[in-house]
Image (cartoon, rainbow, N blue to C red; front, side):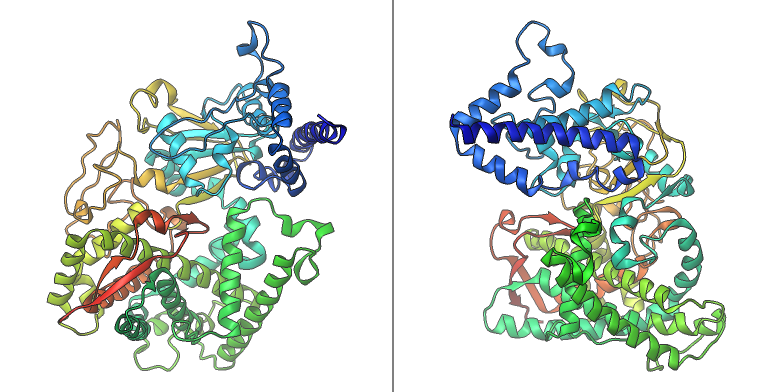
Length: 637
């Protein structure tokens, strides 16, 4: 090997040593700062310089042999298997399961250093923590696959509560919860012991102190103000808005069907959801189904940046020497700053207009308003007019931006994946159409109709079970707490009860991943968990599948718009649970029912390609990789 190659190998090893030393030192000396850096190990690509060097090295077989030898250099002797994990070439082994895992053909020095952190932090320096430690290869957690996929793989191996740990501090430890008892404890029984953690820190520049990322104190102030805005009279008026926006979408689809064009229904659902949120929350006409504008472009750019930051947990946008906003050296951040300025200016204009027309009233009077007749029935109008609900322009902006992001993303994704399943299950699609034809008879759905469209609502509930939005909820422990844990793994021979302690102690600062994806597809809770079966919600699901203490699911005679977390004893949490449950759950379900029923009034749908071609990626919610390309066929009704 020539001198240049030798130098590269030396530099690569040195970089690995430096990174391990730096991360460990930072974790011990400044846990708060480490919190914003440690997740780089979990989710993000290697630093560009190291990645470039590794790609160069990987093309040279001699160099790969050298790296292989360096990694295995400590394996000689009969005590090799007892060495600390940092010295082992493949400490975090890639396994096989129902979820695909990357093959690791050549041990990688950097992977081994990072995996060493995984093992050292979790096993050797956390002796009092009884949570099961996931064991595998660091590459399982890094790459193009959605994060919930490897978390599902480990769940099938290690059960309902396990940990990923990268250093001997709580801030570097992630407890992954897929157990209904543990999840209920975090969301409902002890919600004040946790905050939104990383989510708040990542999204604060975009969403500010809006409801979703808000710290507990801000949330306690704003929730009582915003929640009354989603009252029954307003929701009934919003049904008109849902129909108006959905009708524009249907007209657009009629033209595409007549032309014989394939349609990306993911894009279409996202557009109509954005239009609805614009009208319902701000009284603003985005019109994104039929046109483009700088404001629409800015809104989508900010939505995408929010998603990007929710998955790219190393906050490079806050690194001082890189600059921030329009002064950042990162082109993406400069572009985002420009888009955010456009959207903020638009929101400021909308807020000032609403305040100039302020008609202050008390809560009871606002709820008695005739929302069908007033010109501006938006949620912003309600917040501005609510006496005693005063807040500054910045807080209003944060609330509106949060509702824009949350309301647009979740409904668009719910409709996308429900349509994905119905396109593959013609019999289920026919059931929806038969119900829609019987209840609506060709007219627009009303609030009363939505209540009668039971099977359509259950189809959406099943879509949320298979494709929860979001698939992972983030929390961080604020105080010492103990999670109640019951056996809830998937493989009887691996997730055995001796691997699940009766309780897991959580230290302040530790991170929590609530894997809704795992929970909803847990075969210990649900029959045929990977099958699309809307009728499951019509029959009891007893706790007979091996979960020792889950109380099962019992359908209520009047279940409301959807089976909720209490019906399923936290084995199903489509909108979260506890005091920080999604405030817009009724709004979202009514919106989705209207859009889906109007779609199937007029069309049959089928996938234009194979399900595999659709692909799957994740941000704040679950997206396709290549769009949901659908072939539309007009119905003769």
